[in-house]
Image (tube, rainbow, N blue to C red; front, side, top):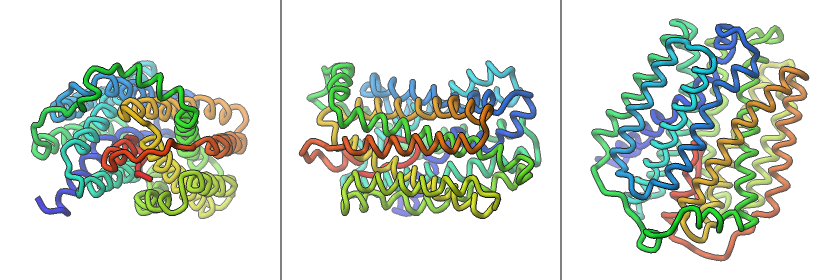
Length: 406
């Protein structure tokens, strides 16, 4: 397989694995109207997938050493199509929420096992390019998944939308069937008898890693808060944007597809903390624009928030890969759990703020999260060790935003 074809295959696998995660956000106004509930209630149900993502991440960290990579990825993507298809029946809101949690479990399992497979079965020379391709496909899913959902709902309705995404889940399983080789999992000799809980205690005992986990929480808190509730602002009376046009708004993610893979080079040049501070500052600079009456200004603000949070995510995950002195998989699981829980809490808390106090107060809450993340960045001082570069890069990419090593 040529380098270009291989990179395209890896990127497409990433796209099909997590395309369900945020695509549903683009159709939140339509879902809210269909269910007749508040924006906060519907947003919590849609973002409940992050509960499943957090649980699945911890499960893979616990049991992933003994799971056959190919079989686990195949099964996860095939099973993912079932809750996706059941959403097409437009069930009650509690069932809708449970199905979104099930989707998150399947997506996070497939995601983590694919990254493990790439880290274990890619040569040292090809590791960086393989993960860069996976990152690119992952970031692209944020854009094109939303565009697809908005377009399908606008033309064919909500039920058809979920049927289309179920077909994409099965397409991902088929792609894995033909492209992922059957190989046994690789277990490092020094970790074969260690308990993940022991590793978790060691990681949580390090102030720098605790701060990194909290930063991950705050990054998705801010990201979810921005890109969930802006939908209601743009679809509201001030802008009156239709469903299809609302989908095109997510072209604001396009710059992130280009900038996110550069985070590693920036960290290598100026360091982790300056890079994070610059990322938070860039995202914060976009917040005042989100309050503008100008559609163009809002789009620019969204682009700045996207680039800043994606860049911060890449930097924070790379730090975890360097700061974890042992069992980086366990550190990754803790980081992912904190990250996705941040998305869930952000959806719930900022939803209440949005419903009660409006968009301006919601933006203030997003700014507070970014500011706290910047404060915690001061504590990111990693131990002086130089672990295997390929392993560090693997852990740095274990989130569905992006990831690069230092």
